[in-house]
Amino acid sequence: MPRFGFLGLNRAPLRRRMGADGLSSEVIKTLEKDKVSGGPDAVNSKDGEPRMNMNQQLLTNHAAFQMDRKPLQVPTVVGDEQMYTMDNQKLSCPQELKRTVAHIYYANRCQIESAIRAALRAQGTWSLVTVADRLTIWRHAADIIEADRSRMRMYLMLAQGKTSVDAGKDIWRLVTSLRANADYLERLSQLRLENQGEERVFPMDGFVAAIAPFESVALSASLALCPMLMGNTVLWNPTLEVAPISYLVYLAFKEAGLPKGVLNFVPSNRRLFLDTITDAVHFAGVNCHGSAQDVRYIHKLVSDKMQRYICFPRLVAECASQNFHFVHSSAKMEDVCSATVEAAFNYAGQYSHSLSRMYVPSSMWTELREQLIEAVKRLTVGDPTQKETKMGPVINRATYERLRKLMESNKEAEFLCGGTCNDNIGYFVEPTILRTMNPLDPLLSEPLSGPLLPIFVYADDSLAEALNLATHQCKHALSGSVFAARDEVISHCLNQLRMAASNLYVNESCTGSSGGLTPLGGHRLSGSNAKSGSAKF
View 1 (tube, helix red, strand yellow):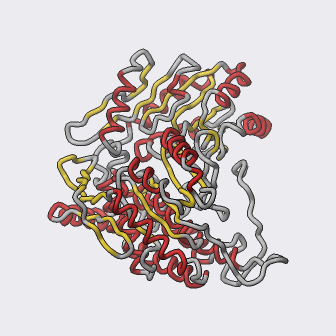
View 2 (cartoon, rainbow, N blue to C red):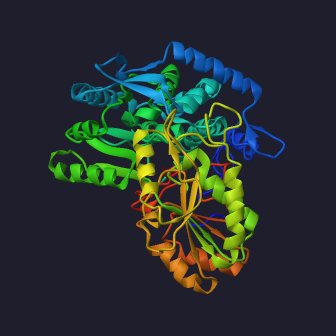
View 3 (spheres, rainbow, N blue to C red):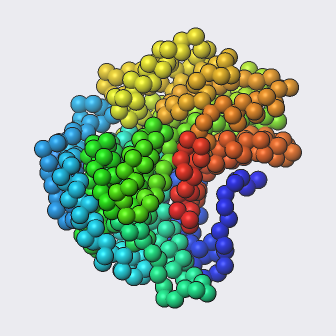
C-alpha cells in the first residue's frame, strides 16, 4: 500500500533529460542504485546489514589523527570576510569527551547586524541571477560535496556521533536533495501561465534566516539553501554540533561560484541571533527546526515587533515530535520487531521522526517482548568510528542529563532492557524499552529525542479505544506507522489516525523508507507542515 497523505505532483513531461516525476536522470539513477544500501559507499555484510568497509575505516582513523593534531576552525563569515571572534566554542566528540573536533567562533550582535546588511546588499543582484546560472552553481556544489564525502562523513561521525552508515546516508540525502531541488526549480521555471510574461521566480523582499538542528546535515543545509535557490539571501545559523560540517557545505558553495553575501554563515547563541534578526526592518522570514517552545518564542518575538517590518514575515518550522507505531493483531511479528528497533535506536533515537511510543495488542505482547529484547541485545553501543558499532552516544550533556533524569523518575515502569547511562568517556545511554501501564503517561505524549521507547499494551477487543488514545493524547503529529495484514484494518486505522501524523506509513518504520526522497513535515506542534523533500518546499 502506498504512503498515506502525501500531495501528488503534476507529472507532465518536460525536457528529455527530466524524468517522469520531474527529477533528472542522474538523480533517478542515484536513487535506484542506493535504494537498499543507503548510500554510494555502504557495504552489506552476510546478514544484509550495511557495514563500514576497510578503506573507510583506514580513512576515518587517519582523519581522526589529523583532527587531533589540528581541530577544524569554523569562523563566522559575513559577505566574504571570515571572522574569528572572541567567543570561541570548543566542540568535543560526544563519544570521547577528551577529543576536540572543532573550534566554532560565535558571532556577536554587531556581527549578526553586519551579516544582515551584507545579505541586503547582495539581494538586489542575486534575485536577478537567472535560474540557469543558479542551477549551475547548485549542481556544481553537489558534485564538490559528493567528491568530499569521506571527509564529511568523518566529521559527522566525530562531531555528531553517527555511525559510518548513518553518516553516509546523511551525506547521500544532502547530495540527492540538492540535485532534486535544482530539478524542481528547473521544472517550475518552465511553467507558463496565461498572465505570466518572461521567466521569473520572485524572492521575498528582505533577508531570510535559517536556524538549523544537529540531527542531519541534509536538513541543516536544506533550511538555508532552499530559500537561497529561490533567489533569497540568507543568514545560516547552525547549532553547535552541526556547525563543522555545515561550514564544509558553505565552502563547497563558495567554491562552486556563489556570490558573496548571498549566504552568510553565522553560528551564534540562539536567543541572541533571534533577538537580533527580528529587530531588523527587512526581516522577511525564518526557516527553522527546534522544539515547540523555540517556535513559540519566535512567534511571540515576531508578533511583538510586527509594526516595524516592511512585510509579513513567513515562519516555517519543524519541531521534535512523538512518533508512533500502532500494531494490530494481524501484523507480521518479524516486520514489527525489525522496523521498531531501527526506528527507535538509529542515531540513538535523536531524529525528529524517530520512534518514541508504541501500541501493541495483548495477544502479540509476550512473543514480541522477547523478540525486541533479543534484537536490542544484538545492538553494539559504543564508538561510532568502529565498524561493529550499531548505536553511538547522544549528542551533548543537556540531552544526556535530560534522559538520565527521565529514566530515574520512571523507575515504577517495567524496564524490558536498558535504563542505564554512563558519561565516564562519552554521553552513552543504553537502548531502553519500557512498558507503561498508564495510558495517560507523559512518556506517551511528550517528545523524548533519545534511545527510549515506551510501549502501551492494549486489549485486542479495545482497538477503537486504543486508536482514539493514539490519535488524541499527543499534541505532536509528525510521523507514524500502522502494522497490519488485512486491508480493511489498514484502511480503518489510517482513517482514524490521519490527524495523528502528517506522514503515515504502512508496515514499515515511521522514519520512512531508506531510499528515495520522502516529503517530511508535521502539523499540530510538530511544525507548519512544509513538506521538505518535495517540489513545494
